[in-house]
Each structure stands twice: as C-alpha cells, then as structure tokens.
Length: 295
Length: 230
Image (tube, rainbow over all chains, first blue to last red; front, side, top):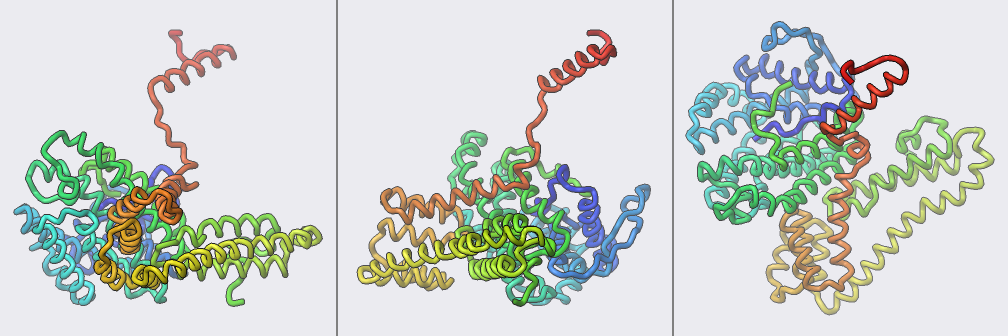
C-alpha cells in the first residue's frame, strides 16, 4: 500500500535530492542497526518522507555521515543522516506498518510471501511495538476497523478510507515533535495523505481486484457492472480526481502552517509538485506497481 | 512584539519597501482565511495572519524599508497601512454579514443554527446528531451535511452534497459560493506557481525533427554542416 510519496525528481536540485536520499538511507540503516539486516527490505519512500518532514520542524543541524551501503557494494559512498530521533521513529513506524501489511497479505490473499515476510519481521515488530506501545495498539484497532469495512463491502470510498487515513494521522503525530499546534497540523496532514494513498491505491488495484474478485472501494461505490474497465475509469476519473486533489490541497495548507525551518527544497518539491505528478501518473495508468523503484 | 518582524515576513533585514510589500502580499495569499474556510486548522491560520499583519504594520511604521526609501515610504505608509487593515475589515464585514444572515435564520430554524454553531466549533458528531433529527431534507439540509463531510475530510460525499444543495436551490448565493470555493481550491492547487513554472510539454517526433532541420540549416548558413546527407 506504500511507495506513492516521492519527489518530482527532474525539478529537484541535486543537493536536495542527496538530502532526501540521505534520509532514505538513514531510515534504512537505522532499521538494519536496531532490527536486523532482514528488516531493511521493507523500507518505503513514504517513511523517508516522514523522517524529512518531522525533522524539518526543528532547527538542529543535520548529522550527516558518508558511508558505504551493503546493498550496493560497488557504488560510491553516500550521505546518510545518522543518530536522529526522527529517522529512528520513521524506522520504527516502517517496521510496524510493514509487518501488518505483510500479515494482511497472508490472511487476505493467502499470499505465501506475506506469511514468510511477517514471520521474518515478527521479532523486529515486537521490539518496535514495545517502543511505541500506544501507537501500535491504535494502529491495530484501526486496521481491524479497516478489515471489517472491507468484509462488509463498504460502498463509500470516504468511509472505507477513513481507518487508513486515521492510521496515517497516528503515524504522523510523532511524540518527539514539540508543541500542541504542530501535532495538530501534522495530524491533519497525515490524515489527508492517508486518504490520498488509500484512494490512489484502490485506483491502481482495480484491474487486479476485478480479476481476483476481491473487494475494492472504488468498484463498490460506483457499482462496476463488468463492462469495459476503460469506460468505467473514464466515467469516474474526474470525481476521484477531485477527492485526490482536494486531499492534497489540504495537505499543502497544513504544510504551510507547519512552518518547516529546513529541508524546504525537497519538501516544497513534494508538496507542490511531486504529489500532483504522482496523482496524474496513477490516474492515467502509467504507474504500475513495478515502476516504484528504489533510490 | 514577540518575533522578529523581518523573519515573520521572510525578508532580509533592511529590505526595501517593495520587497516587504511583495512578501506581505504573497503571505496574505497563502494564509488568507478564505483558503482555510471549513478547515480544522482555521484558527492557526488566523493566528498566523494576525502575526503577519502585525509584522507588516510594524515595519511600515518603524523601519519603512531601506534607508533611501524613507521619504517615499512615508507617503506609502498611510496607503499601505490602510490597505493592510482593509484586508481585515473586508473579512470582518464578510463575517458579520454572514453572522447577521445567520441571526435572521435563527428565529425560523433553531436547529439549523445549532448545527452551524457546532460545525464552527468543530463538534461534528453533535452537529451530525442534530442534522439526523431534522425531518425536512431541503437544500439547506444537504448543504449542512456537505459542510460536515468536508470538515471530516470526506471530500467525495461533501462535494456531492453541496452540489445537490446547489441543484435544489440554484439561487442561493451561499451554496453556490461554497461550490465555487471548492472548485477554486482544486484548480488553485493544481495551478500553483511551483508546478506551473515547470516546462512540462512532452517532445514529439515533429518537434525533434523540426529542431534538427533548423539546426542543420543554421549550420549550413554559417558554412558548416550538421547532417551530411541533406
């Protein structure tokens, strides 16, 4: 369900791109160090973005080290953001979300990869959940809500997206961020990003869900009757485009109020351009799952 | 004054009058109350706006921009200060007009007034509860339902409810205004300057061939050749 948040690369300054990658590698290495090397396979872009966003709320200097990466032995050394509590937090959240995601794959689609992955991540998950007990509990109960709605074949994308949006609200409200107002802003930002991810993902999965006959919120709300998928898509595209873009505009408004003091180059790029580019790509069907490459 | 006014406006210290004014305009656009209507963060935006207005007025009164602008800025001063406050008075009068309209309704529809009050205060569950109790499903009902959905973040339903209210009562200014504002936010975000400035047109074959042909011709004019065969 992840991997949609990414910068609009052609418009990014090299310096900003290096910074973003630094956070990405930072989250990855933080997971490797604290949860074992296996856990590093579960990393997604979205959590790197979370680390950048959370860290932008304070004025501390970047703690950057130049290191090699075990996954890319022949590549040159790269910048990595190290020893940063927000990077560690993003790593913890990545473990928790990835574990639930894999478990869901197993129980939902009977995908054996899900079972293997979840088994591999179980120890890491326990450790991360111990660090953030209340977050893990809330995410769990929201996921149960999500599954319940899916089982009932909920016929409204707004309602179906609600639990996932609330999960993202929880994830974005990082306890290390100081200030009530900032947490409120981050919560609303997370909620809307979650909404956006859920709808985008449902759109992306439509073909697969028709083939497998599984639940999909968009198919359920607009009563897909088994006709041509392209026609169906054309009919509902504008309406979903509104929901998606409106969620993004709410994210942008929240971002304006967050008052980020650093990394604004890459954050501006994501909020004002990266999101729109991704939305259009997915809506036009140019983005299949395998196109989500890593840095 | 708690914060450095230059920092609030995001300009260098000793910035010229024009720079300050430009920065101020940009910020007003960014944090304008209209943009944060029906948004749970509206109070924070308002606070930010107040901060910006204070900083602007302070700078206009005291610093007045860079040194050489001083005499000039004095003239501008009154104009700009009144302009700064005019943004606010306009907003206030708008609000009070809305408020008065609300007052008139109040005698007729006590429930509707309550719903609006709850929505404004952010008590969405309470607003929904009262709304569910109302028997008449007229345009107002759909409008209020739409507002609640939007505030919750249920944009798809919110939009269709507002649209329905407009269809049922096309003459109502408030409903149409809300629908327009939703569409404006949509286009406004997609047309933001960061995104729009980017050169996004794709190259097609014609353009590439045309460019190559032009380049070849130019080279030949200068006595060289870019493509040998033509």
